[in-house]
Image (cartoon, rainbow, N blue to C red; front, top):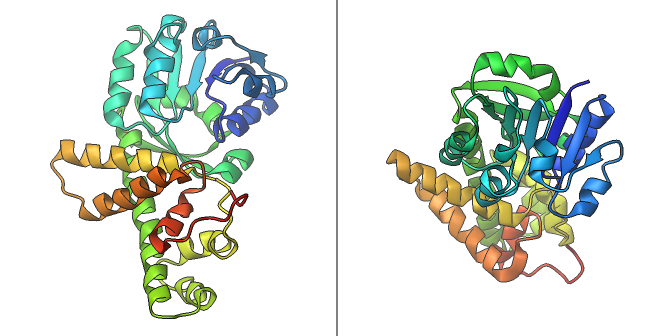
Length: 290
């Protein structure tokens, strides 16, 4: 039985780890809030990332920010301090390629690493239909393909860091589309159009997937998070940082980040990222509808 260390049992990590337990893997789980690890029935609860990693053949990290990944992997009692010789770290957080390479440098020389951020949200993490963007040695990927396919479909993007790079490309479009939808609704509101009818029309337009997917949130005023606005804000910051490093100017991404920053500052960070629409419309979500 393969032993898997799993660090980070948030909205995405917990259902992913459950899939590994159900598939028969021996999971050693760590989460900053211990009760989350204790809720993963069938797994061993670890007191630290190092304890989760000790003796594991592969360690998976699914964390919220680059700073969290750096602490959990390279910090005191982190993964790097205990990961076994010839084991593999699979870093699945959205942290950007620069941080992937920094984390790789913190690992023992004989430790392999893949970066494998995912596209999808809680439903896809639960039913195993995520898209995994993997960077790293193809031989290492083949070693862990069966395990990773428990989460969804694998796209090998190239060398280490290329999975993280592709995830930023994808998320740059998510920020742009959601804020574009908000601005379209703001224009419709200013011109006296009926919001439900506007959403019907937008659902059949080029922005249809976004309009359909967030229609219920907009009409109900309820923004229960599938992907938290605070994380979307972080991702757009990473997009801009990567673009700057690459010498590329992204004006649309900068505008999307500005809207998300304003929504974050307004206290909407724990809501679904579509709540940025309420900031654009100057309509706060109703109390209790989060």
